[in-house]
Amino acid sequence: MRLILLGPPGAGKGTQAVFIAGKYNIPHISTGDIFRDNIKQGTELGKKAKDYMDKGLLVPDELVVEIVEDRLKQGDCTNGFLLDGFPRTVMQAQTLDKVLKNIGVGLDKVINIEADKGVLVERAVGRRICKECGTTFHIKNNPSAKGDICDRCGGNLYQRDDDNEETVTRRIEVYLNETAPLIEYYSKQNKLVTVDGTEEIDKVFEEIVVSLGSGL
Ligand code: ADP
Ligand code: ADP
Ligand code: ZN
Image 1 (cartoon, rainbow, N blue to C red):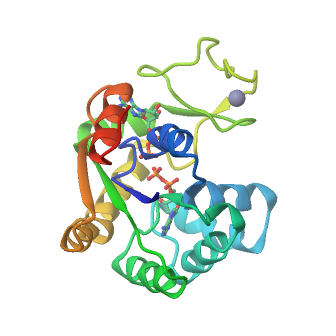
Image 2: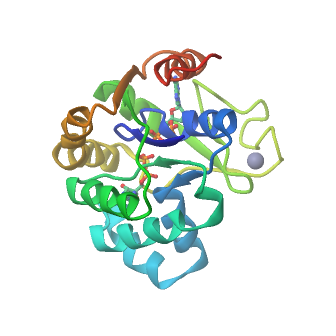
C-alpha cells in the first residue's frame, strides 16, 4: 500500500496513521515529526524549518521535497509507505508523482480526513504528545490515564509550540490556500477517498479501512 493522509491540522492524521501503518505493516512518514526531530537535535535543517513552523507557515518546498525523496529510497519503503503531512502544495505533489514514476511505482489512495474549523482548533489546542514515545493524546477526547504522564511509557507529555489558538488558526488558513487544492488534484487521478474526521477515533479508522477496500 502506498498511501497519503491529507487533511487540515488537527483532523486526526497522526492518530489514524498509527493504526493504518500497523494494519498494513508500512512505515509512517510524518514530515512534521521529521522537522521536530531535527529541531530537537539542533541540525541545520531544523534551524531552517523552525521559524516557519513557529509562525504556522509552510517550510519551503525545496527543503521538504529533498527529505521525503531520501526517506522513500530507504529499504523499508519498498513495499509501501504512509505519508502524513506530505504533500502540502501542488508543487510537492507533482514532485512526488515524478519521484514515484522514476522508481516505477504509483500511489494507491489518498485519504482525505475532513473536519470543520471549530473541531480543528479545539483538537489542536488540546493535543499533548509524549516526549519519549511520541504517542498523541488529547486533554479531553483522548487523555492519558495518568494525567501529564504517558500511560504507555511513563514519559512526560508536552504541548507543541505551534498548538496555540493563533498559530492553529493561521495553519488552517494556510491549509485552505495551499493544501486544499490537492483534493482536486488527487480526485482527478481517481485516488481520493474522503472520510468524516469528526467521528470517534475508532469509527474514523473503520471508515478508512472500508474505503481502502479491505476488511477490518
Ligand atoms: P493531525 O495529525 O491531523 O494534526 P492528530 O492526529 O494529532 O491530528 O489529532 C489532533 C488531536 O485531536 C489530538 O490531540 C488527538 O488525540 C485528537 N483526535 C484525533 N482524532 C480524534 C477524533 N476522531 N475524535 C476526537 N479527538 C481526536
Ligand atoms: P499537523 O499535524 O498539525 O497538520 P504537522 O506536524 O504535519 O502539523 O506540521 C507541522 C508544521 O511543519 C507545519 O505547520 C509546517 O510548518 C511544517 N511542515 C510539515 N510538513 C510540511 C510540508 N509537507 N511542507 C511544508 N511544511 C511542512
Ligand atoms: Zn510515552
